[in-house]
Length: 379
Image (cartoon, rainbow, N blue to C red; front, side, top):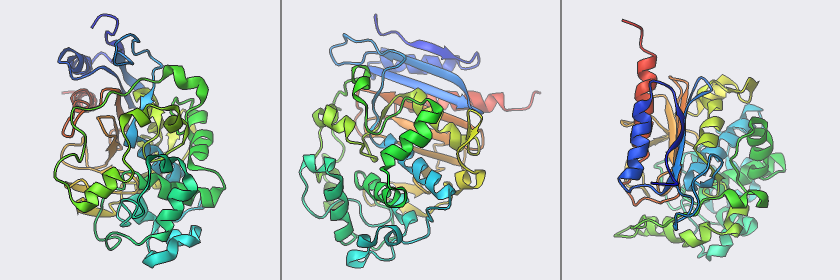
């Protein structure tokens, strides 16, 4: 891997983390990637390696950033929690309280919490959309406001792959008068000095890694009509996500650009009771409210059992503790917040994996094992 060797640092007890991260490259599973972990707000591992382009001409640098698809949703959720913490947003209130047009077609009782937990019944658009419509905020949100849900809201989750950010974002916009991307930038990313962008400035373009398509696209086999709608209306391919138009659009469900360091850094807010870098962003109660399960069971889109809290999945067999918030992006990016250990873990890469590819979990699980060992009382 000459020119793309793994660089960065890990705490002395995290040799296994580096080994697992390096193994992703030596096995050929990875092209370029970054990994970061924090405990009590302090960085304990920060690694990067490989290449930022398919031709392997650009090494992945410490400040390389990449589109992380739905890991962006964790930033949208955090922004909504920030607005709620000020008393401006009530998750139990109907969406229509803030967005009156949303009440159309039987949606007057859908709550903000149901939108946050993917259980509003709006997993996709009923109106056929063209790819470029994803850049038209007014069209995308007006269409969602006008349509009826695909199932009875609150009875099940159905992953809102693209609609999630428009729904949350429009509520935030109605309350604050600013886009969710602007609130996130001004009140979270910039105060932390975090290199994560929902709407990428042109000056950052040279640092963006090229996404490489997976061997097999998600939802490319036998799918239900509901799954097909969520995944393919509109149909967005990797070439579109690699474009300047996508990066600048500020799409809160999937358009975020950052790296593992920025993802882990931002989520220290939630891991540490609302405080990051000595500044209080949220109350501890608001942070803990994200853990409150709103809906659980087999997700109608993902086809797997999952528990959703406010904007994040919660707990689960493969997480380090029951009080863990997490979500990831198509292809393999990941954000995990262990609120018991006050730890965050993040992974971002440019070679998109096929469904069932969990290469991020090797270094992440090695890191949380090390954190757990460090927290054990001396014998």
